[in-house]
Length: 71
Image 1: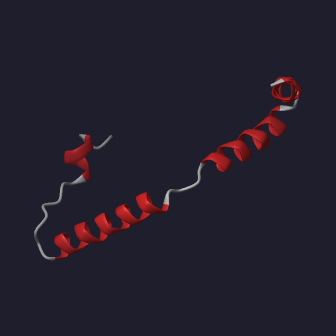
Image 2 (image 1 turned 180 degrees about the vertical axis):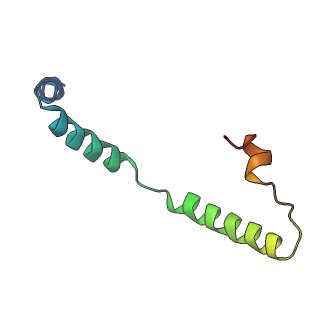
Image 3 (image 1 turned 90 degrees about the horizontal axis):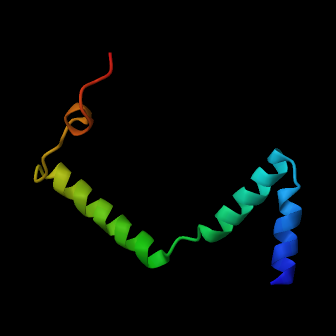
């Protein structure tokens, strides 16, 4: 725990650009995709695409979904 506190203390003294590099590396280290979830989404996407191509899905326009277009 003491080494973690020391690391944080040192990181707080970094320049903003250096902090960004550290933060980005930490976030990327946490962003490890779960293969089971990736596979499930891929199957769902394929299923939806097939249903769309078969005319089994209704589409919704961007405007209908998110409101009026901005002027």
